[in-house]
Image (cartoon, one colour):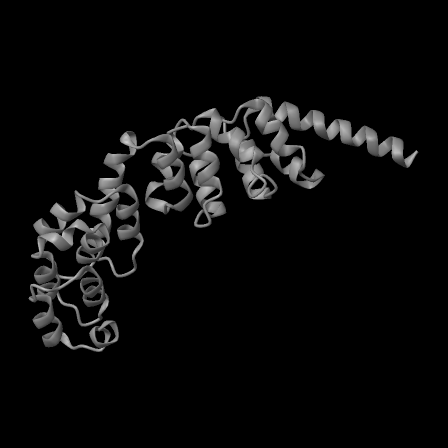
Length: 243
């Protein structure tokens, strides 16, 4: 039956979706079919017993053309993972994606720490900021391991308004991000970076990069003093080596 449903056209899908004998597996195959219209999806959703499956509720929401009130009602029933899957599904209409993201943001304070850690590991750009703002070390560490996160995302988050010191320490300890020159430069230049973190960040930079930082008018003065001290120390070591 699964193979038959995958090859059905819109009229056949509509007829099957009205069947009182429709089961979960068949409903899923109908909703997967590229010819599944909003009319077909609504017929599936009229079978209340099928809506016991979160997967089916989510798939109904992702069908283009579904009435907004109906989608909103179904989105409100989804778990955080269901909302995330819906938001990240390429087939999900933009309006429904934004609806899912807003719902996730509302759920965020009510999630357990373990759930927030799981969300951080899987989430996408729309939720990076709120998760960073939580300033919970396990959440930050998990977010830094997120494969979707890019260097520009990390720099932007470091430069956000009043970032918590926990964020800087987590980035400095991250084997993925700490070695990157752009990250180290961003931490050095940020006035919110705790001084020990800023000085640790510049310690691996080359002489040319350190001199460039010293000449940067936006560099915090306490970091500039530390960089000058580092340059002086390296200069003395170099002189002794040459002699």
